[in-house]
Length: 250
Image 1 (cartoon, rainbow, N blue to C red):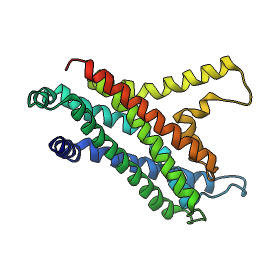
Image 2: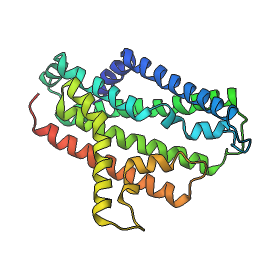
Image 3: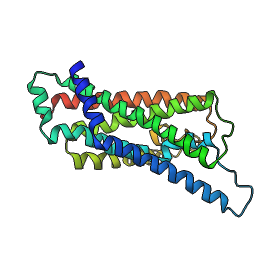
Image 4: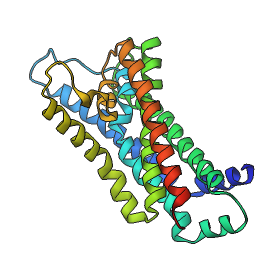
């Protein structure tokens, strides 16, 4: 397992997509800050509130299109071992499917963690360039960021499972882009069938959590629900991918 982890992390930090994806999301966050500044400066009503630095931090993952970038990177990272024949060599050396699966998963989750840190750092730096600091450095902010990271980890579990099962780069990228949309449509369709005005199943899907967690103030119960369901979804996605991977051919 230790050798597998060393191999996966070496592959992770040597991939050009690792650096290009981080640069791309910083560009997106910078453009988001610029657009916010332009919109406020050209607003006809003087009552339009000016964003703060910490508000930029809260919305950095959304502004950086992190979910889209994460899906594309995960597909590229996972499928490269199958397309270039590396995975066959790994199994030929006697490594088990479970160890290979989870060592690769750990590397992808590490990328997700780095992406979150880079995004929040970019949100703070670019927010500081254009806006005031504001009042937001408190326990609610830290709780929000932790919950956001858990949502990102859950998406990572989904993308990793899809890429591991499909194994083809193009099809995996397409699936990682489309899958969150399909899930959102399914939850919305169920809400329409149920027709309950006081309860929405969509609020308990990852997109719903992600939207709520970018707001300026998030209730503690929302943070708890988002964290618990994100961990639950992540475990389900990872276990499904692991089970199918054990039975599939290389």
